[in-house]
Structure formats: C-alpha cells, structure tokens
Image 1 (cartoon, one colour):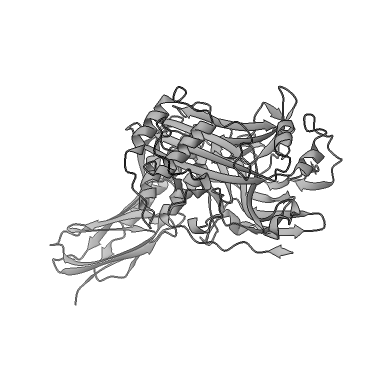
Image 2: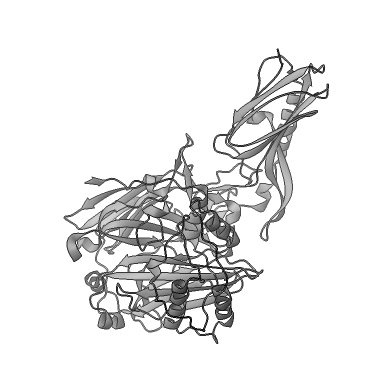
Length: 612
C-alpha cells in the first residue's frame, strides 16, 4: 500500500544554515578538563536539547554539560597527556559564559559562521570482514573532511546499546589541517559483540566535535544517530560470526541500468540505481559539468563563461527489510525532528577538504523549491517483509552547489540517508509502538574491509576545466552588441515603459582567486546596462523601476545623475520622486551577486515621468 510522507515545516534562513552543519557536521568546541567540579549529575547525550537551529550545542558553563563531556572523555580513556590542549580549553571554557540562542536562532547562526569550515558526519552502520584477520566486524564510520587551517579540531565516535553500555572502544582524532586523515572507524568483532550483547536490536551512535579557531574561540556540539540491528539477519549473511561470509545466492532479480543487465543479489538491503550510473564500466560515475571528456557518463550541461552548477540525476530504489510507517522530511524544523536522531533524510556529496554539498536543494522548471523527501514514495510489502522506497529526480532539478565545492580531479563520495519511523525488521515487539531509526548507503568504504553487509556505491567524479570560467569570445561579442543596442535606444521622459530582459544586459566579470586548484580566473559577478535618457529639463521626476529574477537573489543599483537607489532580492521595486537638476542623462542599472551562478531569467521594466 502507498504511504504518505510526514508533514514538514519550512526552514528559516538560520535553520537552513544549521542544516548543513547538522548533516555535514555539528560543531565543536573545546572539550574536557581534568579538574572535577562539584557533582550535580551527568545527563545523557540525548538530554542535550537542540537549539532553534537544530544543533545540540554544549554550554560547558553548565555543570551537567561539563560533567557529560568529562564522563565521555573518561569512558574513552582520553586523558590530558593525549590531548592537552583539549583539556586546557575545556577548563577555560567552563569558567566563561556561553550565550544561549534566542528563539530566532540568532546565536546558533553566529556559531555556524564561526565553524563554517567544519563538516562532521556519521555515515550509516555496516558489517564487513577485516582483511587483516578475516573476521566479521560491526563498523560505523564518522568523517570530518574540512577543518580550516589554523584550527584545532577534535572529534570522536561512540557506540552504545540502549542502556548506554559501550559496544566498542571510543574512537577519537585530533586534526590541525584538512589534508590530514579525516575519518574515524568504530568497530567491534561480531564474535565479541554476540557474547556481550546477544539481545542487541539497536546501535546508538554519538559523535562529539570540538573546534578551536585561530583566535582561540571554541565551539562544541553533539550529534546522534540510531541504527537497527538484527542478529538473525546478520547470521543469515555470514557463515559464522567469527569468519567468512556465506556464498551469495543466485541473483533473485534483474533490472536494467542504461540497457545493461545488473544482478541484484540477496543482500538484506538493496539499492537499485537507474541514475546516476557508470555507463562505460570504468568503476567511476563521471558527471561532466563543462568539459567534454571521453570518459563522461553524463555530458556537460553548463554554458561556457559561467561557473558551473553541479546538476546530477537521481533515479532508483532502496529495498530494506523494515516496515516503514513514515519518512521524516528533509526540511523538518528542530521541534519536529525525531528524538535521538540528528541526521535528516537526504543525498549528500562530500569530497576531502573541498567539503562538498551537504545540504542539497532542488528546483523544478517552474521554480518550485523542493527537497529530497518531496520526491520519495514508498510501498510496504508485508508478505516479503520489505519496504521499497523510490525516487526520480531529473538532472535539471537536482542542484548540489557550484563546481568549486568539489575538485575536478579527486573522486567524490555520495551518500543516501533515510530518517524514518516504523518497525525494524517488521518486529512489533516492545509494546508495539513504531521506533525512530536511520539507515543509508554510500560510497564511503575502507580498503581494509571487504564483503560488506550493505552494498557500497561507486564513487563519482565531477569533470570541469578551470578555463571554462572565463568568458568566451562569442559571449564577449554578444555583450558588446547588447550594450551597443541599448545605447542606441534612449529612455524618453514621459515616454512608454522601457522593457529589458537578460539579453539586454552586459555580464560583469571580475578577477578573483577561485581556489588553490584553479587559481585566478575571471568569474561572473553581475550584469549592467547603461541607457541614454532624454527630456530632463529640471522638472520633478518620478522614477519607477520594477522586475524579477525568479529565485536568483541579486543587489540592484539604479543611478541617473543625482538619482540613486538600490533594492535586493529576486523581486525589485524602486519608486522615487525628485529633481535631478538636469543631471539625468544616462540611466545605469547594475545587478551584482556573490555566488557566481547566473540567473535563469531577468525581466526588468523602467519608466521616468513628470509629476502632475
């Protein structure tokens, strides 16, 4: 039967920023001292409330938060001799006041900007065989790909059962540079896990991140997730808990992937992809943005002279052995997020120190804003005890930021996360109430493991050339022609309304340091046009300018002699009455923006008339 997605609330601007932090990482602040404060109890990680931006910020001036961090470090055997700066910073932080975020999330937004370089995430749980000892392990991976230089970053990963008992040793890492190894893997052998936790049915993961910026400012936050676990399903896939995986059964299903028959084996969790796919069989999905390389699986779709948007099609199915009753929306407000889960439903692209797109957006051809969950439909099959989740996102609707968020040489990891409510493995025990949990699939793997319980995805590569950001000779000629045409068509005072479209404007290119990879390039930063004006004899004039750019936020400046006015957004209205003392002879309209990506359309009209 068809099930509806849960209702969702739209995010405020502050929350949208925090979403990136939440998915890519919650921030951190310094951690742990050695000194013991007066006991006032230790709260659990899930007792730390989310602020208005959905972030579990720690205020270490609060006794309970201080004790929580100290307890966490103690459980992980992380002492002052291992991370001295961390303990010193925690001591200093504990005697300072950390302002609370107000109801608008203003403080959280400030903190977000302070740690914009931190991208912290927990990838989904998996089971795999370690090549070193040929033993099967429960594996959970956390990443922090993009700490800024000059920052000290600590992050850890802890796995527990429902009662808070450790399942595996706490893993931790200290980073000083984004080029360092950025992954943590918490693991425990299935043999050990079975002997100590034979009734385990949910794995609780928590990660604490702490960042100290170059100016000494520290910020700290927690992130939580929970993943269903079934000994029955694990043991069906592995011959024995301590060793080799069973031989996979013969393919039970075939599906077409770009006219190539692909076998879908009897994994407990399956992913059937129709897009994106590796159509040329080189084990990498290459999405070309500006370059027409021979190994492109998807052709370039960006015009020359613009910084390319990353557009990727996604069409496929996820088949899971759980009874799903609802899928949490990708843009839930903090108060609607499920308890114990800080990940949101989404598709994420991540790549080394380039960060990547950790909060994707989609826009239809009619400019309707959408999120990943808007594309999801699912069917529950109680006979075969599985739920099939399907989606179909056309390439021109799936935008993942601009090309400079990614390298054009390194491979890119991508990851699906689903935050759901339902009955894991169709188990209605424990009172019969549905539970909140996460599952996912991604390309994040480790070379030390094989025979993954949940199949892994091939990596992507984005193809673009730095010289593609330079305006082409043809576009420069067209710009000159547009300006010449405009200069020959004057605006008459008391004349008809003057209509302008994007083709009437001249692109503005500014030299800018793009990044270490592309160096300096001329990139698009706006549009301008200058129109001759006739009829200003010193009379009082009414300037009326309005228009729209449909979703592209820009700053508009209009000037003509003594007249000067501004507006911003994607809809523009300027009305002003004044005397310009015969100085209005040329009307200049200038649009400027920072994110380099051009507007799809511009529709501007102008009229200058006398007062009556």
